[in-house]
Length: 307
Image 1: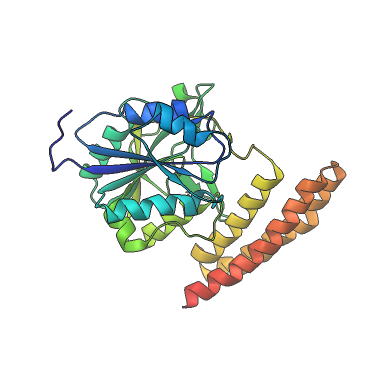
Image 2: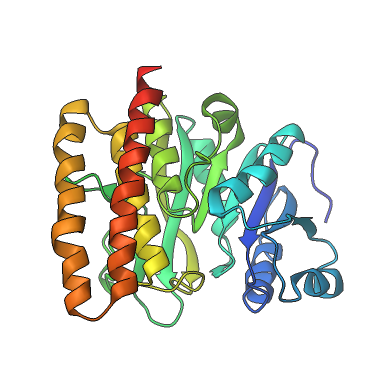
C-alpha cells in the first residue's frame, strides 16, 4: 500500500520473554492494523531461550528483532526500542504486550484521537479479557493509598458506560505514546522491572502538561497475567515495590510521610504473617522483600525530587 510521506510514522513495540507461544496472535493483529500510516514493528527479546528468534525469522520476516542478552524487564526493554524509534524520527510509539491482540481499528482510532486532542500525550482504549466479555482496563486510576488500578476492572462489556475522555493514566498493555512528549519528559523509569512503570510515566507526563486520553472504540484482547502469573510471589514483590516507589515520586510529601510507614507496616505485620498462616512462605517473603526494597526506593525517590 502506498502511504503518503506525511502519514504518521508509528513504531509498534512488543516486549517478550520466552513468549514464543504468544507472539503469533499478537504480531498478526499488529500487522493487520490499517490506516494512513508508516508502521514499523519491532520485537524486543529479553534473552528468550524458547525459539523466539527462529519463529520471527521464519514467520515474521518483516518484523525487526531486537535481541537483548538478558532479561531487562518491561520498562528498560521498551526503552531500548523507544530510543531507536525517537532517533528514527517516529511520531508515535505503540506499546503492546505480547499477550495482547489488537482488534481492527485500534491504532487508527487512537491516532484520530491524538490528532483531535493535541494536549494529550498518552492514549489507551478498551482492554478486554480474551476469554470472556469483561473489561480488563479502560485506563488507570490512582486510589487514596496511591495504588494504580485498572479502571472498570471486570465490568461486563455490555454494561460499560464509559465514554471517550481524560483518564489518570494508561495501561502499558496496549497504549499509544506521542513521541514529542517522550522527547520532552523522558522514557520509562529504569528502576521499575515490571508493573507501575506505566503509571509513573502517566503521572510524570501529567505534571509536565500532557494528559492521558481514553478511546472506547479502540479495543484489544488480553490474556491476563500470562507472563508473571496472577498472585505469584514475583508479582506480589514487583507490585508492592512499584507502589511504594510511585508514592515516593508523585504523592504530596505529607501523604508520603503517612502512606509509606503505614504500607510497610501493613505488609510486615499483617500480610506476611497471614501468608505464613496460609502455608505460603514464598508469598510472605515477597511481602517482606517488597517492604524493604520499596522503602529504599522511596528514599531514592525523595532524593530525586529534592534534586
